[in-house]
Length: 89
Image (cartoon, helix red, strand yellow):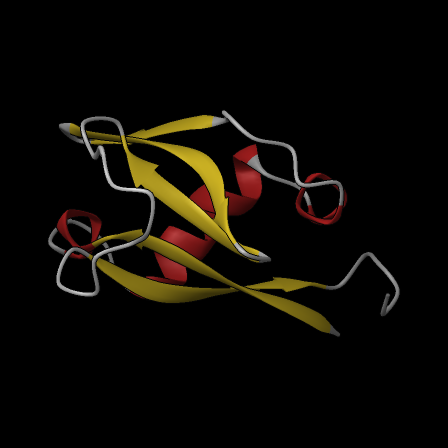
């Protein structure tokens, strides 16, 4: 089973556990989109909207109002997305 580490806003952790955040991510983002580095997919959790970007190869749900070019470790945490429908690439 393949897994992707994805950076998400800390604010999301106030509303849901990591396992629930994984489900939310997987409803909107596929492994194929991550491999193709599709950007811009937006997800809103309560009042925090984030869009899919990449920091190197790492998927990063960048907050809508974040103007940095890199994820601030005080504002994001990692969640694993497990992909059971795709082959190891």
